[in-house]
Length: 538
Picture 1 (spheres, rainbow, N blue to C red):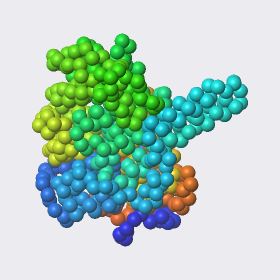
Picture 2 (cartoon, rainbow, N blue to C red):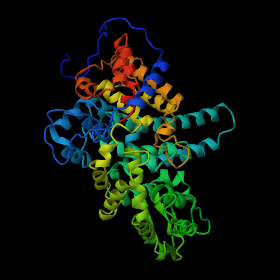
Picture 3 (cartoon, one colour):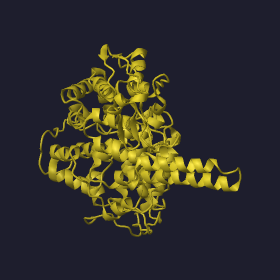
Picture 4 (cartoon, rainbow, N blue to C red):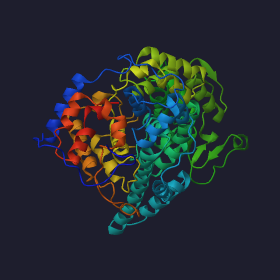
């Protein structure tokens, strides 16, 4: 019997007997096909009682419990399972929906605190980029100019990588797992592309101050926070939107992608009117503009964000049949409130959440109840999530949702190393790049898709097998030195530990057990487990 505690990093145990080893991808395809055909029925369909309300300390963990916990978090680790045992479903969910200040492991907290991106504000970042570009423009063509350009690009790439590194470390190690999932969800929903304009310098602050504070709060506040952030304004070109020179790009995406959906009941005229409302919403890293006396009180500035009334169209607008009087910034706030109050917004956001957390085609009745909560609670994201996570339809979906690359990679790390701090995040980013879901890497504003058909091709499954092998064999480079951190040792994880026997082994598919029995080493056993259908679905 495996003793309690964190995973042990040691020489692999000797597996009894000798068996022919299947080739990597051939094995995975065999396992995947077998799993798809024989995946166990859900707990609800098996007639197991549903955990409603506070069920107290759980004497026995059920498959339903572990699948529910996998879905609410970025994957199982010993601490999360222990918390669920101690609190029960309702109290565990309440703690996740209303998290306290999360305490990261000391090495992780220290690594984040040491990052330059943590202390850089958009105004200073953009001013620095502007000054460097101006100086670069004065240099003659040649080696000096190329070096200056490379130095500038390297600095932007460094800040972008630090932002991603911070995101991934928090996703793996934060006890506020639902908050981290929602930050990933909203970063994808309000997507920005790091390689446009100067967005690389801004994504760290965008996550930290536009997305993170509102990830479980008011949807209206979240929309306004993204609307005011220079990363969004640069990405969707609203800094170019002014009276007489209207740019509709952001107005269109704000309706179609961020709030109402493509079938949200708005017209092209509504897009045009919203674009007029958004005139003057832009970016300024220099001195405040000289304004006419009657406009000075309407000027608004916070960091690099600016509302310039001299660039605003003060004509009256009509949005969804409602007259919007030309008032300046308050028009923007009123327009956002009007859009978020539309029933189409409640339905669209509820369906997006249910698609990510429940099913590729979520049950209409569940989406309707979530939308009703959204409207009754004035866009309270936590309340909508509570409706979803405690729904019978959510229970019925457990074990059937295919993990997108982010959830696959992060859950693999959480399970395999079970709280042990890694020292190098670059392998995680490389894996996400290879799977096509790099953070801030979606060029189009629609965000990455969250349905199985987009992530379950043969090429994707083959790559996942190789990632599972890298993690399972300890050869992924996760413990190499990075940016001043010392290497933190080597060794492959021993996944046949207490966490495995408590939360995974009792619920494995028969085909998975048979495949694990063919493994010739601990490393191969780890690889087979992490690449199995049991681990691909949650």
